Amino acid sequence: MKLVEKLFEGALWNSRFVILAAVIGSLLAGFLIFYMATVDVYFLVQHALHYADASLTDEARKALHDNTVSHIVEVVDGYLLATVMLIFSFGLYELFISDIDQAHGNKASGNILVINNLDDLKSRLAKVILMILIVTLFKEALRMKLETPLDLVYLGASITLIALALYFSHAAEHGTGKDESASAEPEKHGH
Image (cartoon, rainbow, N blue to C red):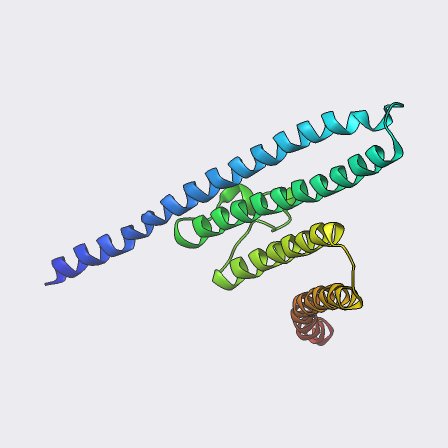
């Protein structure tokens, strides 16, 4: 019976390697989004070079300006989404397979990619997703036509909600840090 238990537990423990499919898939998706966003930047630069063309009318220059700003926001959105995929991939690998030695021993990583538990992964993903939402709101605000006073109220309300989300995420992050430093300080003075 002990042998069956040992074999079952070994098989159960090794089943965690199925996560590699999600790790590799997320990594490939992240690379794909990075590639697409970079190609968008290439074509964006090509179009933006025409901005100084003397033959452009003021309306055409304004349209090129607005189009360029909108595309830049979309590129930022793409890079943020690619970052989410990379963080998700690294986090799954660290949680289920093994720690990434290069991330833990490298000061340049600044512990950004070090994931200790599922809550840590969720927190990091939530911050990047919040940034994607902010960029998306900015992109939509650029395209929005304010035709009625209610449109302006909606825009103001969405900006207020984003500000509150940023405030609460910042307060939650720094609230934890204050508790740790407050509990560490008396120990320093006590010794």
